[in-house]
Every structure is written in C-alpha cells, then in structure tokens.
Image (cartoon, rainbow, N blue to C red; front, side, top):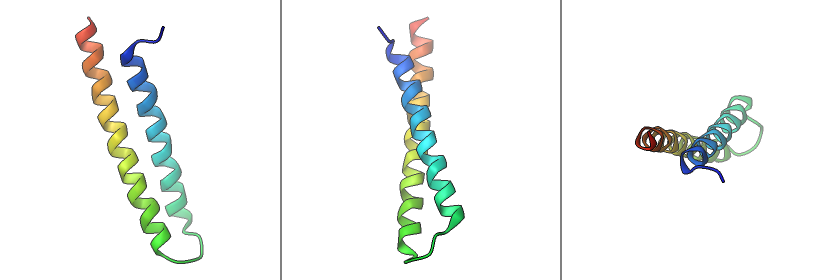
Length: 66
C-alpha cells in the first residue's frame, strides 16, 4: 500500500505539471478573447499554490514518519 506522504508527493507533481501546462498556454498567447489567457493564468497560479501546499505536507509527513 502507498504511504500517505508519497500520495502528497504525487499530487504535488501533478499540480506542478498543471502549472507548467498553464504557463505554456499563456506564453503561446492564442488568438481570441484576452480573458481566456487571464483565466488560465489564474488557474495556473492556483495549481502552483496547491503544488507547494502538497509538497509541504509531503515534507511534514515524511519527517513525522521517521
């Protein structure tokens, strides 16, 4: 069975990947209404914050497990 700390690490990785996808989308700046870029940028920042949050939980659970 997978430990809880490892699940937080996987979640942090997935969230960081979502952030990178949003950064790539914003950097390409597709044509169309500009509010789409702002929305994706906001979702990217949210994904980054969740990634950092889950990574901190991973470190806490990892140190507590020792």
